[in-house]
Every structure is written in C-alpha cells, then in structure tokens.
Length: 382
Image 1 (cartoon, one colour):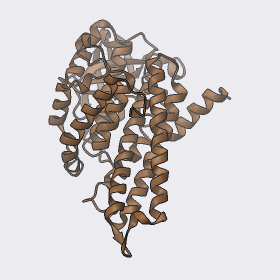
Image 2 (cartoon, rainbow, N blue to C red):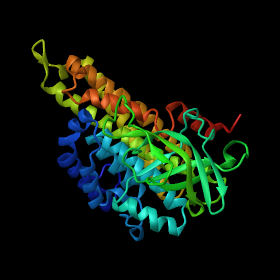
Image 3 (cartoon, rainbow, N blue to C red):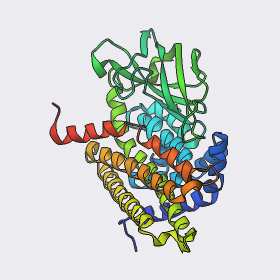
Image 4 (cartoon, helix red, strand yellow):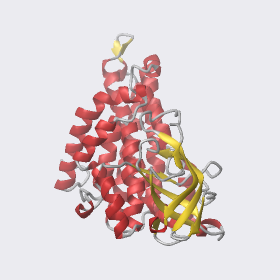
C-alpha cells in the first residue's frame, strides 16, 4: 500500500536510497562517530549515484529530483547516520541551492556543476561569532576595489568547512541598515587570505566537520558576487526556507532510527520474567514517539509538496522543522531510557542518536526562531 501518496518515481527512489543507506552507511556509522572523520569514500559513492546533485537539473549535472524526493533522501541517509545526513544537507540544500536559485549562468557552470559531480563539497557561511540567530548582524565586510571585492571577517559553525572546496558566504557591502547592506559571494578554498580553522569539537554529528572561516583581505573577483549588492540576506533567507524542510527530514531520520532500535530492544529485553515491551511504562513512550514522528513525516511531505507546487512555504517549512526536531529529540530520549544503562553506553547506537538529534533543534534556525516565524506568519509583526 502506498501510504503517503508517493509517485512511482518517488517510491522507487526512496527504496533505492534505503537500500544504499542500509548496506553502505549503517555498517560504517559507529566508526564515523567514534573517529570523527569525514567519510570521503561514502560521499564519492553518493556522487556516483547522483545524490550530491539530487535537486538540480541534468544540465547542471543533477538528478532532477523534486523536493519530496530530496526529503526522502535526507531522511534515509540520516536514519543511517546523522553525520552523513548533516554534511549531505549542507552540500545540497545550502551552498548548491544559493548558486542554483540566485547565481548567474556562468557561476552555475563553473561552481554548481563541480558540486553536483562531487568534485568539490560545498559550505555555507552565514553565522558570525557575535551573530547567532541575528543573521542580519553581519560584520564581515566586502569592499569594492576595482574588479574585486576585498573581504575581511569570519564565519562560525560552517558545516563541511574543513573539507569543502566551494564556499558561499555573506558579507556587508554597504552601511545600509539591517540586512539591506548584505551581499552574497562564492569563493574557492585556495583564495589567498582565506583560511579554515581547526575542526570544531562538537557534542554530536561526529564525522560531519564544522569550522570557523577566516577572511584576511581576501580578493574575490566581482564576478563572484551572487545577484546584486544588498540581495544576499534575502537569498539566504529563501534558501533556509527550503532547507528547513530538509533539516526536518534529517531529524525525522534520526528519530526513526531511535524508535526502531527501541522497539527491537523492548521486544527482546526481559525483566521480571517478561519482555519489557509488555509493560505500559515502555509501551506509552513508544506510542508517543511513533505518533509524533508520523505527524512530523506528514508535515514534511506537506511542505515539500507545497514547495514543488511553487507555493509559499515559510510557515509550513518552519512548522515541519520545529516539530520534527522536537519530536526526534523526545524519541531519542525515550529510546535511551528504554535501553536503560545500556542506552548510556557508546556500544549502543541510541546515545549517538540523542547527541545527533540535538543539532536539529539548533541548526538552520533554532526551535525558538521557528516559533517566531510561525507566529509572525499567523499574526504579522508587532
């Protein structure tokens, strides 16, 4: 039975991704987490399968997948490994997306085609040391100097930073207030004056490396300006709207992995002469997690279908991201408790799921920011 109204193409794609995730990612997930090493070989395989360019048209080397298919891709990859899902999401949903939707044809041919082919990974530089959720508080500056811009500043929490070859960033090009002076640029890793800091030591998603980016008088060709001056914040905001659907799918995958593990464990673990699945104290949190994850899945599919229909999705994407992230974290917490002491041990995967799920509450807009977006869409600004 086709429970979710998927087309034949979507269903076949989903099944193929699930097979890949189960056979190629799941066996490596614990080692990726333990070593905190980026799985370059896996990404090379995903490039061969077209996953690194999934949402983009074939003329740019992409697979032409719709938004529903991309959400299914990220759910299944993240069910196998939140770290692999995190890096894949940053590559296809952020850096590549800005170039495709807002770049020139020359920028797409030069940079996007390399990203879709896996010849370079992408990173997305928006957040600054003093900015956090105030993404318009951009202090990185780009000063026009002839046919170049000179960029000075820094960006933090850049997923894929240590391994990326192409970076899409924001910088302030004028003193216009708020976001109106912010512009977007694409630059390559070997640009003189551009350095990537040492990988951050994170609570979760080990193997999905993040780092601070430093710009010390980096000369960026004027042709690398994306769109026009002052459009950068709007471009990034539109990118994040779509990206939130994919973070929601990422969270759903992690939460589903935790639920599956908890159900399997509850059936075989015995206490007081019975499987713990026989006790309501175990049954109820599993029922709640299953219900919340199913609701998250439907929110994601609704937002994805609206995006494919080119309808406004700001509220729906925020709802999906907010609800899925919260549901995933609760599901992972319940899984750890059902495993008991073993749930706190590294040899069992549920403690990794819990650490990985926390990232989904924070990245691409915190749960508090999602609440704010939803409220503003309902009520307007006050």
